[in-house]
Amino acid sequence: MDMVYKPLKTPFLAAAQASGRRTVDGLTMLIGQAVPSFEYFYGQAPPKTVDVRALAIEALGL
Image 1: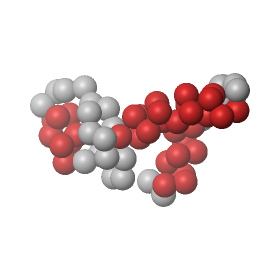
Image 2: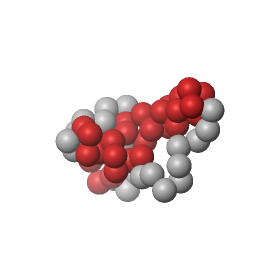
Image 3: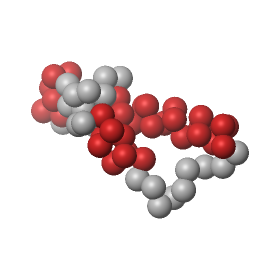
Image 4: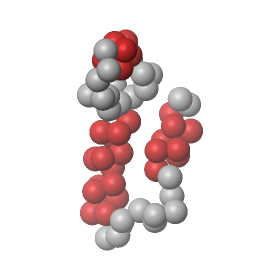
């Protein structure tokens, strides 16, 4: 796992993928933290119809 989310594929992740390792980018971690925060503040989970990852990618210009 690389906690960096811009760029999504860092040299570290690229090297791990090249050696056949499973990788997790930093955006996954960021979203993993954001969803419980959303639930706390709004008292409900984000709607299932919302693609949080796609929205984040668009907002970050990735």
